[in-house]
Image 1 (cartoon, rainbow, N blue to C red):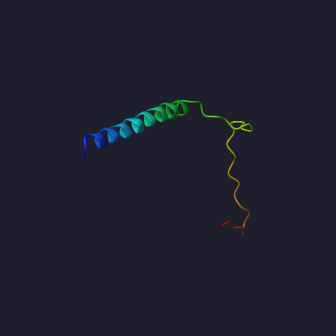
Image 2: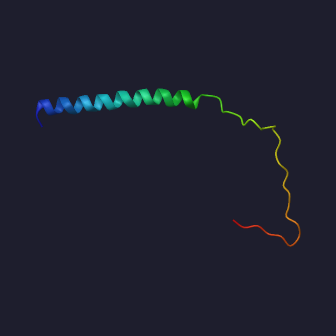
Image 3: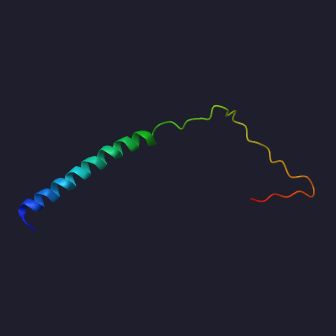
Length: 59
């Protein structure tokens, strides 16, 4: 490997590292953002309604 090829390789690595660092900063900002709440969320849990006798469910 010549010195010119090594310099090209090092430049490519530096470019990728800089791009990853920029993406990480953006990703961290999204990570620390508050979790959005649904518009229809009234903080109630839905009760468990059993099926009537003789009924069953399958997926």
